[in-house]
Image (cartoon, rainbow, N blue to C red; front, top):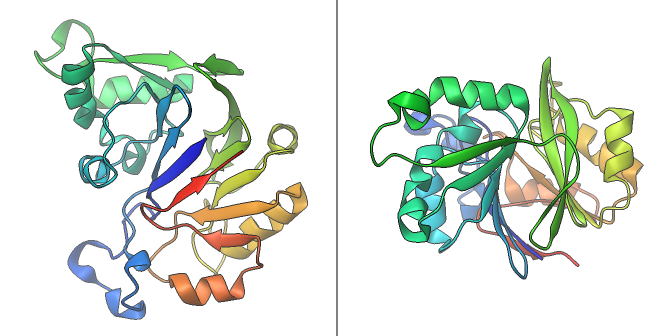
Length: 253
């Protein structure tokens, strides 16, 4: 199985609109971060995790030619605003695309993208099947387990996909969810910044502590803001944990 990090930045992207604060970071291209999204490829499946505002650009540069399904972690716009860009895949594949997420996220998507659903569906717009996921499902050759966690007061989902656990925008991981993550070979976890503490996001030190607690041998951090320099941060991290960067590809047994 292969994971491509389509985007690794926080909700505002890095650098933010207007380029404010860009001088804080080195010219390392790994410091340019589009909004968080990932592409999972297996022997028979091509699966997206989240579809943000830069998805069109991300899909072109990573040459994504087929999408069998989508997993959505939560309803914030940096994770769902690219859903309508899936229409080109409808045209080519000639089928609806299944989207797996929580019941509350389904309700939010239907409200925000009302022109994609129901009697008022706009002709030619994206065709999606919104499906609630609350327990393990088999999707082609992948076992997908939802991982409930907390983004401040908002209940969201991470996902375990075979030996990969992917969680973004996390502040707290319940004990029962940690049990579902245990045994993963790779974890992808959000780490907003080094300091100070944040009410709805893990800091990088908090994320490192969780990865070590779970005893996972490879960890990749995502959802970093424009105060986090890639190379300088990696020098500070333990050897088994590193910042991910846009278009990075990793293999998972």
